[in-house]
Length: 286
Image (cartoon, rainbow, N blue to C red; front, side):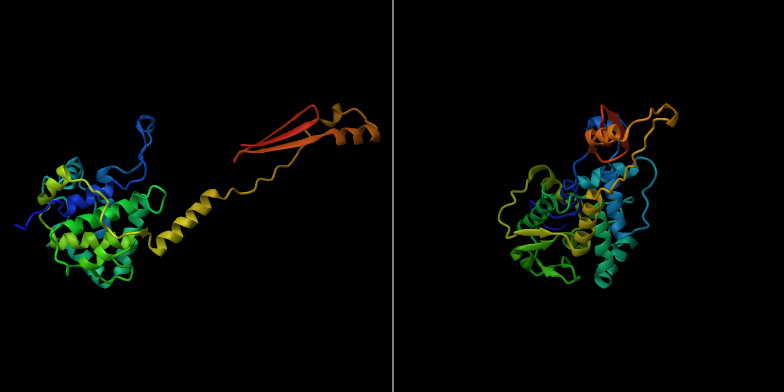
């Protein structure tokens, strides 16, 4: 059995801190109203496994949920339902992808992060996650020369280089640390004491900046632009008074009426409501 330390880097410890980087969850009221955020532990675990193996499907029933909880909390090994053993087809396929087609592995991890993690926001949950994992790597018993595939171009960095780094790219870091765990830390239950007895201090790292990989940043900026752009709304003012009910008016009276008429437009984002009261025309865009 490998030598144990606290903190100890393993799958359950990694996933426990990863899931703390979720966006804000929906509250009790939203759940009562039937709203669902899709960020439960089993849903997150399934999506994370699909980073390794896109065709993976969760078994029916509550078995997957139970195994997710037990593995995340380091109470058991991966077992039959979680494909994290070193000799599984999913792990070998992921290893092949990381070593020979890194951009595919990176794009899958970026898609996972976009859907399940709070990335590049003021909450800095991504920065906290990276600093926590670096703190674990620093305090764990890991040889300085061990390699982690944490760079955007797929090249590895040693533990020593990670501990000296001042900038970390978020999604490649997740790829590299998870890949390392799969091949160097198969004994998940050794992380149980880390789960129960250890808390990160976020001190002692040299990290000054955690940033998203370029593809994610471009996509995030495009989404923010799309969300904030409000398309122009054109309103046509129609006189609803039937012609038969109109009384003749002199040109002088008509001009005076037009001079008095005011138009007030209120833009609230959707739908159009037009009202006229005492010569004041109000357009509400709700």
